Length: 303
Length: 256
Image (tube, rainbow over all chains, first blue to last red; front, side, top):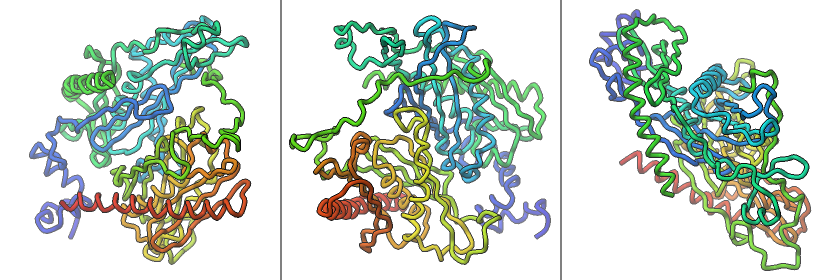
């Protein structure tokens, strides 16, 4: 056995799994030349995607998103804060992305994954800049009290396209979010009203009655693609991401406007045509994701 | 965005603060019922599923009422470089909570001792000599804390180890009992744990009738203690049956 370039001859002689591990690039190139991927997907097709709302009981909004095996659990807890002086009528959203050691063999306790803070930042930028949430709706009392929405996204199983799954779960959690009805106590604290009618009798007026849900506009949806030679692979698995390193993530909103675009380096330099192809693939994917979200939301209203 | 203005503003949870240590019942009212309507000696329905995380060598998900846990097992794999040579395998355990596991955000990090307790509960059940020089990592994430967290983590972890094909003498099942006044309640929920007088947890290998961990805290009479231990052991053997049937189902599903 010589250099990896000789491996073409070996492919017929050795076990498929061994060949896959020893010569991953050759293994993939053989597939790509036939326009098929090892999991039997065509190059431009994303994996099966599901979204379940209300997965966590103890929070105000939650969702579980799965793209293939990649699993994300997002949960929102609402807390109260004093709005800053620059924007007295706005609430705030804090987004944190976590990769606990259970999700991948490369994450060890005490040594957080490098990808986690990067994804945290990307998710915050995308969600806050898309204008999906109107922060003014999070205001309770002008200049005195506003909601702080803590969105925590946990990766439970990391198998590629983490950003796409995380963003989908975040959107699911915001769609599921029920803002608690609260009242103001005598010492200026905001407290949840457990029973609205009961407390009215006691003379406690709710501060925010009738505003239980946030209006969600311009929902951002994303698709991550791999660029490898002349091929474009949509929705990569962890194995594909480790072999072919150039990733492009396109985020479009529901009316197909570009929200953000990430190409964090990588060995492949993209031509305009490749970028356009990625955007076109994302446009198709947005329709699929919008349908999945609509079904999840209508499924929740039936309950 | 909070970060724009330097330090994030301080926030507080608007949920009403619980009345401090209001006893669930006094000794007089005997017709007290548990908050979830269970009998005193009745466990919550247990749900287990293996192969929950595809990236791990083995994994399991467990749900007991509101207590929801995922455990992933990685390895046997290379030990850390700094480790001394060892001709038996090593076990490395870690238990973490999600920030939303507890009613108030970010309180789950209080349970630093759980990692080492999980390690000690499992160590005796694993045939460490079958993977010399390497390490098996057992990582648990408590998604939601609903009471009796540690026993659920231990049971779930032993199932994940079995799913990963790590050799064990037997499955390890864990159950806890809380002592509330004169009464013993099995598999307590968070509310009951917060006002218990004493607590007892047993993790055991029911087929071998061996206890791998026993912790007792708080106030106990000898009679209560004996009764509680017997309750736990009985519940453990029933729990192990459920765990075993979960493994069998998974195995028969993968064959067909």
